[in-house]
Length: 231
Length: 267
Image (tube, each protein chain N blue to C red):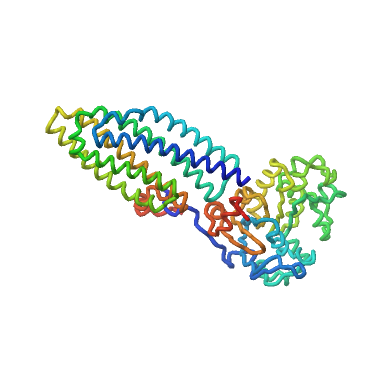
């Protein structure tokens, strides 16, 4: 029975890693296109997303099967729960890569604007975070996951700066309204990409350390501000 | 507005102090002749809660259970250390009185086959000299209702206790145990001989009974321990390895051996 269970767990992890490598490749391509202005790198990103979607369904079914058939406890149970959550995050990352690709194509003629707004740097940082988050999952490395969580702040800063810069560009050069709008949407996607990488890192910490750390800072504030219980 | 728990939502460890415990064992070691079956077990069992005892075969969990109503000595065993029941040493309590206060339900349903269903329920009371037929009938009805058996047997109360199904027989045995108004019910794998539906009925019954009684259950079924107990004790090779609230044991146990056992990776 144990061998059977181990085989199921291994197969689940393998599928998640395969899915993660496709997503990683999608993101690598669009961010490289963003950095270099070579739009042709985005080719194939959309078609690969179908594979990601197929893995999404497969992994969900595998998790359901393991829960129903083996009823795992403790670390085994956390592994399945984290796999379900990470699966969800990766699927969203795949969609985001497709969305970024669309905006890269639409802003192909505005490469200097991308560099000036530091969106290329922002993309590079988000891509690094996703890669590290995936590696933290592959190697059960909660320390690496912690660094991913800390880096989310960097992407948020890039996002704020880019937004400011693009708005001022639109104000001073109305002819840039269209490309700048595309770039604002693109930065939002990149910012979400970093958020999903952070979530993957948090899910890994949940599995390895049995700690729920999502929304930690905000919730500590809520706890402070909450009125005393009536009971 | 009530507070939403926002931090510490992973189950924390919770211990039972001696003051909170209904039963407390101190350095309890149990023997069968030369062979030692339990080693220095210190365990505080909380009142009106379900405590599950889990562990592989031969780990001493049934021996531990039998020590608590001195059945261990009936089958030729001995023990050292002390067991406090409601702060009194077990050795200072008359064994007959003790077994009335600490009832036991066994793996295999064991109704008295020559007795009717009704007489099975009140057998202990009759043995203690109760003769009032009206009162005995009332007590039988009350306890058969408590175990959810009344509607199933009320038209056949004079049939043999052995004529009903295995699951019904086990509930009859529980009715017989609680008719004596015990404070504690010991259960030694009470559902291992039953099908899933009969098992579910016993589990629901345990959930109801814990409002009035302290229940200690030995089970091999990990899911059952997780479902029905408030506290879980894990025994291995005669030693208590870990005791904590059940949610903690089954989500994030403190000891590696516990994690390996509940995950089926033992040995």
